Image (cartoon, rainbow over all chains, first blue to last red; front, side, top):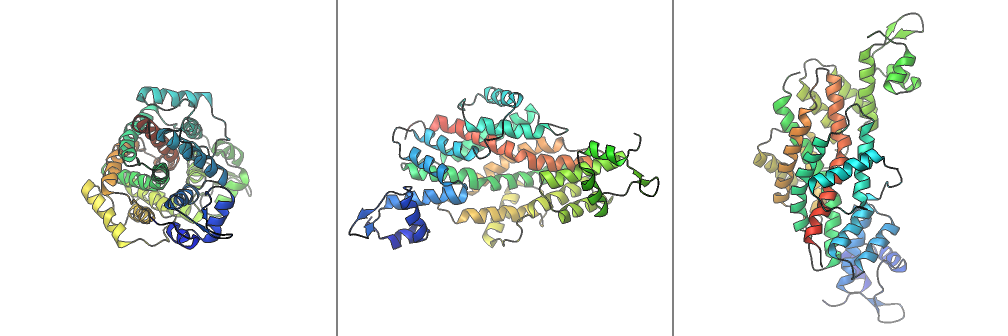
Length: 209
Length: 209
């Protein structure tokens, strides 16, 4: 591919020139190859980087600090793709990490991971996020049962097997973008299909009061 | 159960007295039995109704008009429990109903329902909500495949079978509250377990770049 000017970079990435210049100033996008005092040429790697930044900001709704820490992980050749995707997920689940978590809920999450024989890092942000969600439910008359958690785990491992298989790529930026888009953008798809399935099942069961 | 005064109604429902008076004025809560010019006694049915309103407002994030239309359905003895839960789901999925939906996406949703042999009403708000989510994805490099939709459908019907079984109740308010709480509050639980499952699966697959 031939290198491109800023105008083409803007067109290819779908981002306005001032936004791209902002990312350059913030150090999120590496500088182009200077061809004069005020002009520079950009490569395919700049397009890929901008598309990833866009997914992180527009799809995942992350702030600049979270984006920066993910890009640092992407640029660290010592990290495996698994660690990379983990870094992105940590940022996604860290959103409301300020709320403390009960010991009881943490224990139930650990038990679920053990029962499922899952490899989930002891310090994974998902463990705290799930414990927090369980705490929210515990104030209700009918808290969520372990049987339902196991059912969710069975269903989600089948789903994740399908999803993760389609993420791998030689380019870390591409794998990362796919992982984030796949995780966040597919959530409403999965949840709406769940509601349709509930409608279908309840159509059989709840015909009469 | 003995009837109760406003103070006890407030304590039992967890809602402040001014909020309860607001619901009374708005006609969402039926008046109590008057015992003088300014006093009234309330029954268990008032507690149940307030708990349902609270779930609709605080958990499902619905506005007064949506709450009113659900309560009208609850009070309509001609509706089956299935229709009742459907009315609630319609309000939940109607949130961003303003965005138009592409024909292509609608057709894919209809095909999914047909392939899955699901009973989902032709006018169900879930169909439009799913088509809308597919439209959001279609702008991306890798739109969601039918194979993934089928995988989601298989996983969600197993989950829904478990969920719907625990909703039934003799009291329409109770069934409704369970259906709404179960649908909305369990979403973060399910999605976080999906992320943990992704971490587990990718731990096996993506060890190296």
